[in-house]
Amino acid sequence: MATANPLHTRLAQPSCALGVFIPAGVHEPDVQRRQLDHLAHAGADLFEIGLPCANPALDGRLIRSAYQRVLVKGNVLDRTARAVAHAASLRPTVVMTYWGPVRRHGPERLARLLADAGAAGIMVVDLPRSEALRWHHAAHDAGLSTPHLIPRATTDADLPSAIEGASGWLYAPASDGLTGFQGPLDLTALEAFTRRLRTASALPVVSGVGISSPDLAARVAPLADAVVIGTPIVQALLSDPAPAAAVTAAFAQALQPSIGTAHDA
Image (cartoon, rainbow, N blue to C red; front, side):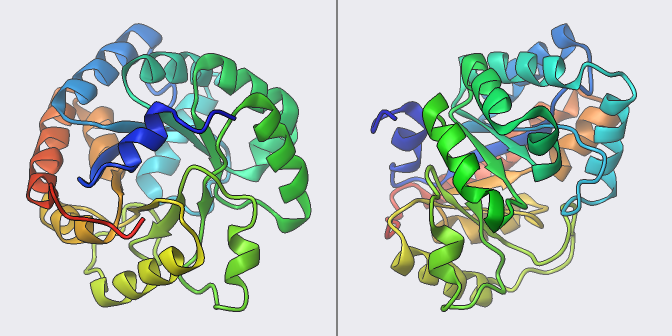
């Protein structure tokens, strides 16, 4: 795997990057391409494309609903590959998925398909430890990074095994809730957790889940190399796609004060 690529380059910069999550295939390909163009121009530094699945255990109602809309259309892999291809032509792009689709489609096949589409990596958020070695080999052979989501409850004793095989980034959820959480964030606990991750690994730290407003994004930014927003964007895309770019721009603007903040990455 190449040691220098646009994803690594962006995450290595001192300013906190803005990642934008969208589920693949909610709209037809031509509409989704225009949406991605607008989000990139509005300030998205990287994209996280969700591969729709039937039981997204870590996702809240809105993203579940979006995934269901895609599943009833069919051709999910084709829709995802199309979304990844266009997103990757604009910004570094990582696919977010669960082990269920990886197992069903085959780790090697899925890794190669999405790598050929232009993905920089695939984050399997519920990767079973018993399948980790096979998955890491498949992703490595395809030239993909393998970011890991690290639950906040991970103990110091379990942290080395949770990080083992990770590449690209470590994902530190800002909330212990499902995606779409809109309550207060325990930033003190998040800061302590990101410090633990940086002590255990030199990988960049990315945070998302519950970063529901530009103000919260600004407060999380000094703790992370990138902040990923999902539900605020998905809500706009599902109801009226036009405001999604404005939402992205508001979050991007909120991260501007973090320029020049050094991360211990």
